[in-house]
Length: 151
Image (cartoon, rainbow, N blue to C red):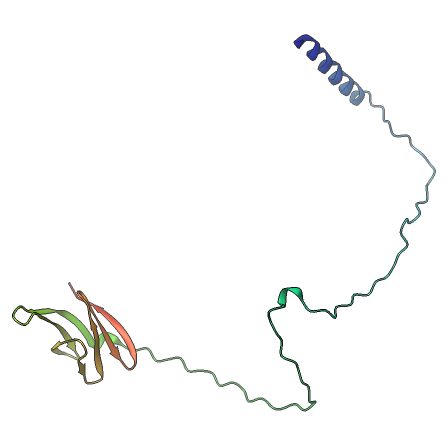
């Protein structure tokens, strides 16, 4: 069975290589030109796009009303960027625990003065919003900032 299979495949490969090595071409040269007729006549089509966009069905465009009168538009005024706050005037120094009253007070340095503060306390324009185990949340000029304890 193997011998028969090898024989058949050998014959097939022999025929393939023999036909490609002969140098002969199976294409017959002709000097005659053949005119090819168009099978489909040329037609011109017009695109009619008066239907809604299927991908923008959920977006509704406002109707444009053109009165013909152009109104002058004032140039846009650029927004001034907010002035960044320098938070270096506050330093969180540490935590003071009172074992008798079981209260925690936080020691901060505010503009060079060391002050003991509690949650909800306001000193000048600085509010102590929340006290955490190792940090505190401060509000100044409607901006919030977190301070970690210095080690």
